[in-house]
Length: 284
Ligand code: PXG
Image (cartoon, rainbow, N blue to C red; front, side, top):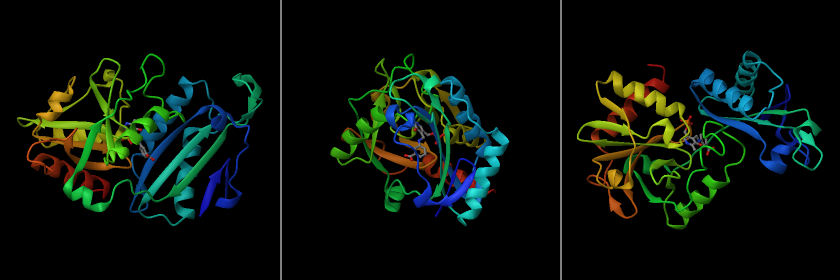
């Protein structure tokens, strides 16, 4: 496997960074997770836009331009002969002295990994996921904007641990107001009486790129789509529920906190949107 690091493609053993990198010491940096389908990087421009905006928000200057980084991503996919896989783009603040001062850091690291990812076993895409509600909430949106995909995912990791301890591969996270936000690495949707609902951006969610694509597909399919505040009760009493994310793609959720959602199977609208999403990823 070849890794792109600071403008060079090197074998993975040679792709190393300093232990003084503030990405490691403080989680100081940003990342993106992007899918590759049929050798093509899916929605690359959207992911790069979010990466550069997140970097700007944390005062991190990415040392290459967006078009240059796009080219580097394409080169990495090609160098690894990746057909269907996953890109992890990581920008760290770079090595510095101990202490938070960013003025004492230099050389932000630009890392591109092209690999495969499988979040959930294939049978769960047929059966649907069980969820629990995590007691760990999303970070307060006024502490750090949820739009910054920062290298510190600790609260999401804590929520994920709560899920896996309860034998659930995803966990629902609430926001600081007790409203439904999203899952640890996926956005959430429900279907109720034929209407597709998902929490609005101001619920403290990451505005997922897959979420946006699915909203667009749903509108094209003639569905009524609403970005509205959701409570846990809305999910318990939904007809259908599904999650979206670059890694997860579209996957049904069939129970929350031991309450069956709908008839406990992936619902018809979920299945239809999943099909439409797959067609989109195939470039149809
Ligand atoms: N919410 C959160 C908190 C996320 O981290 C999403 C929603 C979905 O966003 P996109 O833009 O991907 O539709 C994410 C994205 C991983 C991994 O390696 C995680 C994500 C994406 C890709 C890979 O666990 N999370």
